[in-house]
Length: 191
Image: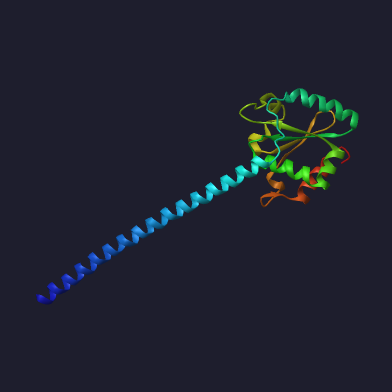
């Protein structure tokens, strides 16, 4: 009976120790999860801050106060005279990828030259201030499908000939020179 009591005592002691040990491990796992969440939150906040700083430095080409339809009508008249297509970059000053694309084209001489020679370029605003719903409706609301920026190519007569989502033009944290160049060259009036 003493042996049995001793075995039961050992078993209970071992069980109690393992339960306590499991609680310690669980506490460590919980603490690790809290640290991971805090670290992820910290990284997320740092990324948000960096994006906000980048966005603040980039030019803001979208004008929420513009009469987009009137502007596009004038571009169509000009496009007919100059035999160019119209490139509409739809988005807003709130969209970092929209601002990055604009900056990329403006600061990449090869791309800027293609655009200037072949297109009349327009930044169509979409923002809480002005969603330009009537204008977007006539082009099938491509931002709803593809996000922003989205590109709408019009021929010289104002007929929509192509809609291009932008994510396929991306590379890393920016845009691919080859993909953007190919896109621009594909939809010129000379193509």
